[in-house]
Length: 314
Ligand code: BDR
Ligand code: CA
Image (cartoon, rainbow, N blue to C red; front, side):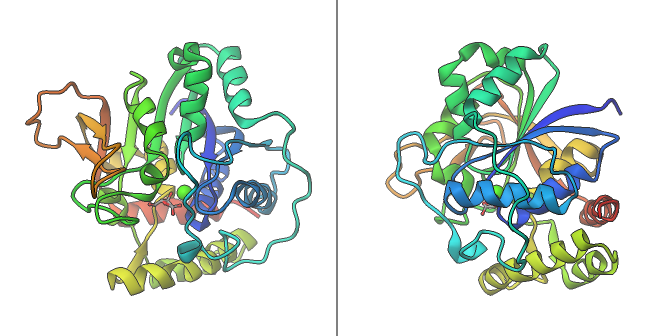
């Protein structure tokens, strides 16, 4: 597989953190240029600090972290401390970051970096509300032609919603940004709850992360142990869904996923359905396909990949 240059846009978050670690444990396939933070699970200052701490944990303090947008394009922020805890990465108590975030704004970093690279070089991995990418597209429409692909943990159709009965968190927080991106014409892969709800972090897998014997494996086990509390109470499954790492796993091993190229539109002003991803899985609307919509995963292959990659880290 040719090595892909990626930028991770994220709101860590325990599952975001596991995704970042998986990417950093995959240097043969992925060249992580930077991490850009966004307001989402917790406020921006915390997601930025968490991104710095997680890259430190992985022994990669040279990875630059840029702070992006502190709020959605048009709406007030919505956070999810009830799921992730007050820090966003409750379950671990990591040392203070070894360095500050970069001084440039995350949106300007995205614009400058995409402009400085040829078309087809950079893939954007988005693990939170897609505010930064939409803002970059609005500020500098020419960058859309430079993006190879956006792979975004977002949306739900068969599994409906997790923050409202009809909306998944990352879309619900900033539906206007989602609307800009799905209409941009950029190659977009969506990794929705429909697939992440099949990637359940069972206790067997948490034990395997801990048994790796490294500090990153222990941190993954501790973080997921905290975050499952909420999901198990809610769903009553054998393990909590592990959302964001599906994005990185999709880049590394697309063959373990099942997807279909379909039309997806964003509900902006529903009475009860704002932030819904209206996914035309059965092709009844005749609207043009704009999204590769991921629907299923081989969960054992997924967790096998994650444990292998986290096992390569300190
Ligand atoms: C998404 O919302 C966040 O809470 C998680 O980090 C994930 O990105 C799941 O709906
Ligand atoms: Ca996230």
